[in-house]
Each structure stands twice: as structure tokens, then as C-alpha cells.
Length: 553
Image 1 (tube, rainbow, N blue to C red):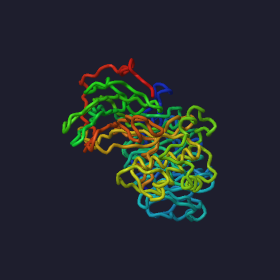
Image 2 (image 1 turned 60 degrees about the vertical axis):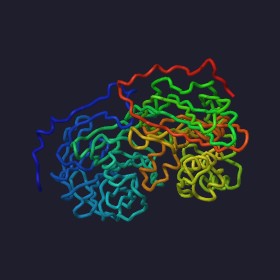
Image 3 (image 1 turned 135 degrees about the horizontal axis):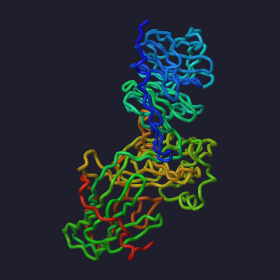
């Protein structure tokens, strides 16, 4: 047995405390100290001690969870120890060399049972009160197994491509991934990733649970950290990105008839959780008036009586904004019931619209198939989200059809996915709306002429939560989860609506309508030009735009 003098390491622990509990967000570090040796792997908690395994010393260490002091030490049952679990009486330890999982009496260190691991490269290990769970970084699976002989009871795909730590919190599984540096909360029935938090280091190797918090051991920094999970903070913003958008609406008539009038509408973005408008938008030409539609969306309206033949007319809006990568932490058990949704929200966002047709037999049958008797708002949203991924595939073919036709043919654009998702959610009694955005396409200096639309569901206790049914139609669970409760800093949301708008129709970002005398050949083009905004760029204080001329129609 190899040994290592670890006494000097006992004084190296570092305790970190948050300045104020109210400032904590999920994933923040509450406490941190050095691991007892330089190659930590598994982690578990027995109600009193934190246990960690080390693959170099081949030891299991029982630590004081307040200080990191070593209070117990046992020889590992093999030479490459990995995941650890506690079943209420004994420790369980995976050994990579023998591909066995050992049950160990912690009072004597004696191995009292062993079972074969059912996967090729098991890493994390946990106990749910009856059975063991393990995650595998080669097969990319999570499996529930019998503690008697290792028989697989249930298996599903792991969140990412390199799963390491695994723990059961009494209701959900948490699984860490070393490539994404994230820790995922996983539904043990379906394998769906429900939410995720940042791992505190670059190589999360082991996880355990204590009194509503996660413990994480990091293999790269040799650090054990206690993490915030639930503290009442529902939204976290990171990675601010300052951008300038030049939104362009182009109009030209190549005759031979004449345009007798044109109305241009540019949707006005506002502050949201995922964005801050830094300055008053600049228009060229100046708006005729500011209008508000029935969804409380505001527009800059520009009217022209006549437009000369073959002349190119540009209508522009320049907006400076700071965009954020924004995550919502939605815990299913904390979401209220349908009855908890305010009456005003239900009245506005449960109405039928032409694109939805919620009473159509196709939509009604789809809701029944997707939900059965489900009445909980969170699971209505998740089950419809999952259902559409099995019924539609993305195809940008032009035009926007109605929800029943889209579902019947089996493909659609981002707008069409949104129409079906909204129709099904509203048919199930869950208020849902859409948002439309201009997208930064890769580089900070880029052009967007395609744009993007997705949905927001009203969850009591959390209010409006983003759901992108087309973006989330992906293969891996962690990628599917990226489009639920998450908004990238690539988007400037300009438009919020529940259905058709008097000024925008079913579109978003910008729109133009016109009247003509005689046959005309009208060219209409709209796109957004992005450029990065430096910290030194001048910005004006945002104020009400055209408040004196604001009209609601």
C-alpha cells in the first residue's frame, strides 16, 4: 500500500464565506478547504463526516465538514478508487481497476460485499435509500442498479459527454460534467435536465449532499467546496456584452404603379432580465408617433404619403444595449398551481388566436397525448416541450402556417414551433406568449436577417420563464436544457406578444404596410447590423420615447 505524509496539508484549508446570504445565487461557494491529498475522486456524506477517496494514496478520508480536518482514515478496497456513496450503514466505493463496487464497514474498514459494475467506466456513485445510482463517462449513461448484484434497474442518457460526480438529494439526481464545468439537476424518472449551476472548478470529480447544499470535490484544484443550491434567487446574469444594433427597414417600389402611402413600425426594446437598454434609441427619420398595441408592445411609427418610383427608402433605429447570459433556477416543487396564476394573466394569455386554433381536434389530441391528466404548470410546460421534440424537426421553408397544420406535417421554423407550443400550453390552461429578437450571429460585428422567436410561460412563483422549443430540439440532455430557463447574450429582445398585433401582424422586430395605385413591384428588406460597443462609447440616459405622442390602439 502506498502512503503519503499528509499532516502538512491539514493546515492548508481555506474557509470562504459569502458577504450576505441575500447576495448568494445557486452555485456560489459557501465554504472551501483543501482536499486531504492531491488526487481526490469520490465524495459522500454519512451524516457526520465528509468522506473522500484519493486515487494516489489509495485511502478513504473522513473529514470534519466545517474545517476539512481528517478525523478518520481507511484503506480503499482497490487501487483506483472513484465514486463514493453512503447507504446509512456502510460506504460504497467504485474501483476502476477491478470494475467492482465494494461495500465497506466504516468501523473496521472491512469489505463486506462486492458487486460488478454494469458499465464500462463508472465514475460517480450515490444511494437513493433503496438502490445505488452510478454515472459513466464512457457510455454516457446514468444507471440505477441493485445493491445485491449490480443488476441495472433503470438507465438513461447522462446530461453531457463526461459525467463524473453523482448525488441523490432525496428527490432529484445531481450530476457534474467536467467538459462543460456544470452541475445538472436531473429528473430520475426521465433523465431530463431540469436546471444547472456552475461547477466551482475545472474538474468536478465528486458530489455529495448535506442539508440543502451540494458538496463538490475538484480534481484540478484539489479543493472541496460547499455550494448554494436554493436561496430564493431565481435568476442569475453573467457575461455582459455591450452591443450597438442598427435596425434597418428598407422599402422601394419599382413600378410601374405608385405607392400612395406607407407605414413603417419598428418595435421598441425595453429593459428585461436579459438586457439593459443603455441609451435612447436614435431614429432616421424621426417617428411620426409612438404606438402601443394590445399586448403593451410599443412601436416607433413612421408614415409616408407618397414614395417616388425606384427610390430606395431606409428607416433605421439605432439602439445601444448590454446583453446578458441569463439563467432561471426553477425548482418544480416550488412552482404553484394553475389556480395561483393571476386572473389578469390568464385572461390575456389563454385566448385563442388564428395561428393557434387551440380547439382544433389536432391540438386537443396532442395535448391529451402529451399530458394525460397532468395539471401542474411546470410539468405541463416540460412535457409539451419534450413532446414537440419527438413530433417536429426544424425546417426553415418560408411562411408561417397554423399550429394544427404544422403539427400534422411534422416540421417548422422557430416561429412555427412557437405557435404549436403556445397553442398546446394554452389549451392545457398554461398562459404562454412569445418574444422576438435580433441575434448576434457569431462575431460582435455581424448581420442578422433571419432573427429568432421563442416562448415564455407563466409559472406561479417565478412568473415568465423562457422556453425555446425549436432551439431545444437537440440530442443531448444538457443541450436540450440550455433552451429551457436560459437566454443567451446573443439576443436583443425587441418584441413581446401574445398573438397578432395591429401594427406587426404575426411578425416581430419591424414591419411595413403600404397602399398602391396600379400594379407595383415592391421590394421590402429588413435586417440588423451589429457592432461592439466599447466601455468608453457615449450613451444617453434612457427616458420615455415620445411619451407626449404615445397612443394605445
